[in-house]
Length: 98
Image (cartoon, rainbow, N blue to C red):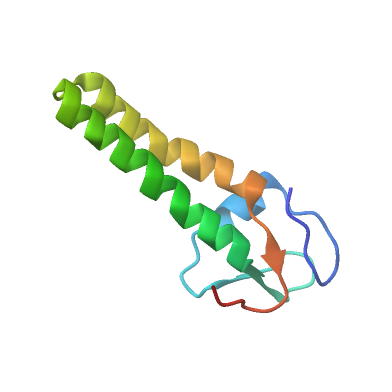
């Protein structure tokens, strides 16, 4: 799981998942109470993956016609992506720009 860059404690999946939905841009470490930020590298990857997969599914609808498989794939990707995010999140002490 993710490791705090300040106190070097590992966050659990549940802690990372809950803190990934904060709106302030930073996540408070549950151990040392210091603010941690998602690294710029992870933000790039995190925004790129849905922007590639969702248009691929939608273009499949254009070529092969609408189907329930595409609908279930779109509905299934969002929770799957949210569940996998804590495994790949990288933390940083300071907010990094792209």
